[in-house]
Image 1 (cartoon, rainbow, N blue to C red):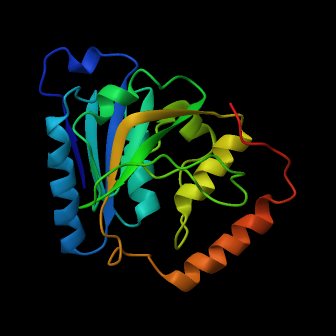
Image 2: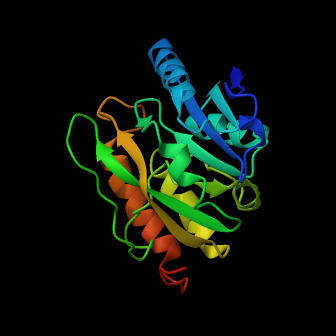
Length: 212
């Protein structure tokens, strides 16, 4: 199922650079309801995104890719159903996005004070970019979107974007609020550990540096 919300302000759909915020879910009715709550929470952004899309699909990768393909904006921001965007997220993200650039937000843990921005590292060693990182839609489509993995599918996407020549920006005032992921589907510690090993082996022979 797909739901698309137009921005509440008459001129919001024309604001540039354009940003679509995507919520993707799959699985039980519980996650469908979580997706709806996340979708509705995005309607109160101080600078509304050009559109908001929620897809409940057959897998997380399928739902995210469907949202990315349906989107009409130049840039995409993905939100997990158990996370939230600070009310000023889009307002602080919009000046930073540009073609060919991944834009990293600040992170906040739900229920805790303070925010932090992860320090850039070699992406082959550790994923320092979270799912709320803004990605140009053209680049997203160029590298093939998300692939169906048991976990770490966002890490795989960022590495492929990086290898395609993406630069990195930081929007320190755009705050991505991370919820409690312990009950999320696909959060299996052993499969996560195995995928980290597999991912590192896959990219270790490819020379690239953090920068941009």
